[in-house]
Each structure stands twice: as C-alpha cells, then as structure tokens.
Length: 176
Image (tube, rainbow, N blue to C red; front, side, top):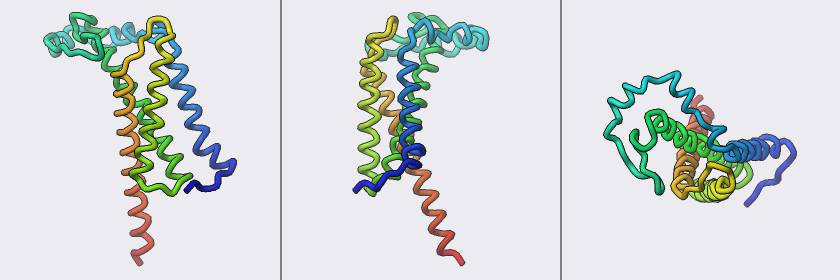
C-alpha cells in the first residue's frame, strides 16, 4: 500500500535522494587525477609509521593487488579512504531511500529493507557502469558489493533508530 504524496513530502523525501544521486554521479564523473588525494595525505601522515605498521599487509581487491609495495604508502592509505567513502556515501543513500519508503508505504520492515537494498544496489551498479566511461576510472563488481554493504549498514542504522524512537514515543504515551 502506498500513501498519498503531496508537494511537502516530495521536497522532504524525494529531493534529498535526487540531490544525493546527483552528488554520487558528479563524484564518479571525476577522473582519477582529479580525485587524487595523495598530496593531502603526504602532508598529514608520516610514511614511516604507516610502513612500520602495514609493510607486510597485502590483499586482493577485485583484480588488483593492494599493498604498500604495489600502491606506495600514500596510495595504500588513499585506497582505504576511498573505500570508506563508498561505505559512507551509500549508507546515507540507504538511509534516504528507507526514509522515503517508510514514509510513503505501509510495508513491513523486512520488505522496506529489501526494496531499499535493491534500489541502492541497482544505483551502485549503474554508477560503476558510468565510471567505466570516465578516463582513469574502472568499474569494479567489488565496489558494487561494497556500496551495497554500505547501503545495508545505513538502512539497518535508520531502521534501528526509527524503532527506538517509536518505542520511546509509545512508552511516553503509556507512562502517566
């Protein structure tokens, strides 16, 4: 069941999603050179301490081997900052989509969760496809998975906070 929607709801629920979609699109339209944050990292962090802690760390992400040896110290740090950004950006998107569905539908939480994850995952996949046309950028299934995990975390956080707030409101009305 879908509730009636008015202009105020469009502004409160749909506009933030469209703006967030636009932000994601704009960020993924930037070349890798434009998004290079290694110079900033060099100013803020000591490469010796990073080397001491992570010199032996090595793993595969997609088809790429990630290590200080293959990426350099600051490239290694940049990798984690970029991947955290994926989680954060898609957790916010997950919250916004869930907020919309919760406001406009009478669905059970599980259905709301699944639909929100699906919408975020589809957008993540289309965003990665879009990146494949941007110079210096690649489309990675691993990033779609990471984006989906970020969305799930945001959705779970939003639904958990909503349940806590609802429980508090109910208790306030029951307590004399």
